[in-house]
Image (cartoon, rainbow, N blue to C red; front, side, top):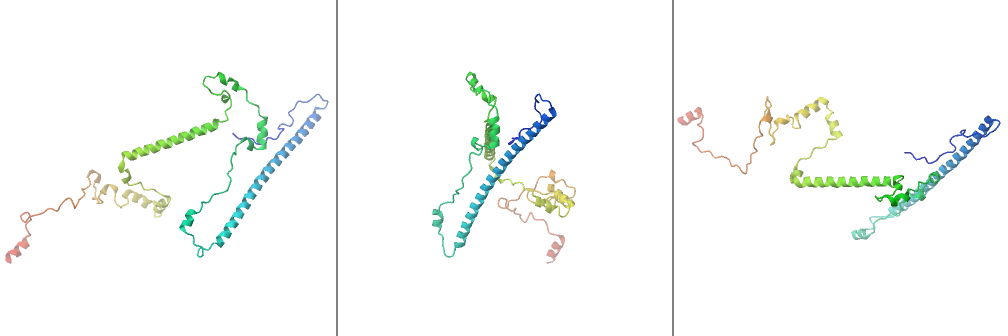
Length: 281
């Protein structure tokens, strides 16, 4: 809901009860002219107030800029006078030196009753006081103030506080949940993380054309269909073979499985030409 800072009065120039006069038209004209003059007076008052606030803010800004310019000038003089070849700064001197501390005074009590603008304060003073409902507070059984059912200035603060507390509880609950999942799955960190897609990679893919991007996505990063690539990196046959129905080949371990030994009796016979040459020799 917008807060009207300044109200120009009177709003209605001719809506007044006419007295018993001979010429009503002349009376209405005089009343309208008087209300126009009152409106101009109210407008000039608020214009002066607006320009006064602008002057105060501009003066504050100018003082801050001049202070900053002086600090920059002092820093520039120190930097130009500093010669690292002549002045050696030891590590002990750096550690013993006091840290920088700003002397800027932070603004406080920005929404205090004393910091209200003059037009808002005038509007506040013209408001009616709430009814004396606090007299009914001793007769309540729940211990709540009776006036807060009519007007509660701390309502929005309490609402904001409840929201912040609920957000804090949700964050702590999420942290406990992640901690529990990490405790239940100790090998979760070994899982390969999902690759993050960026706009740069998308544009790099689209440089050669959309048809190449689609074919590459169908074949996979290795250039073969993903169903024909086994876990050990071997590639199956491409000719009408459904590789998903076959288990991946077992991984060989040279350290655990020794090479099989063959005897001479188990060897296959040599070819005929070799046997003929051996018989001639």
